Length: 154
Image 1 (cartoon, rainbow, N blue to C red):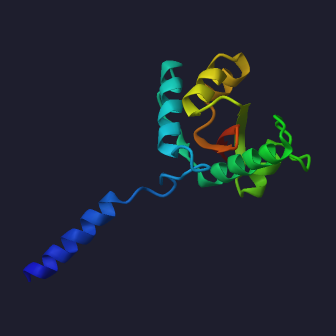
Image 2 (cartoon, helix red, strand yellow):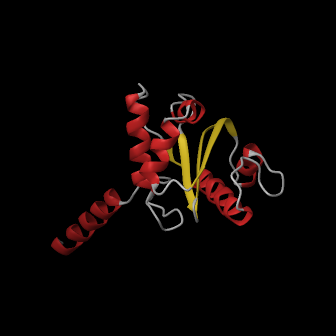
């Protein structure tokens, strides 16, 4: 009887410690973790008056990583993919239907903190980060290229 109760209790504790779906720590190119990116974005958004934090989306992560890899292969900084794809095309390919979507790209910024800091000095990039319409994000790097995709699903 004691062993059975302990076993049930252990399963309940393990289930409580598992991350909620879509909130797992995912490496983006192996150079940083998504939890750190989410925290840094939430700090910037909080300072801009947006209290609700962004949640990580595996589909947005896939779209961001795909574009970062493409930028690295092209050795070009652009919002258009090598095949002519725009952000909404990349989101559809990743299986994401967006009612609102924005994208920031950067190159040669060093690390995630420097990248976000640089974007916050640019009015258009800052507006994307502080966009109250977006609720989810994906953040990726490839070589020296960084891509942040934020969106709200329909």
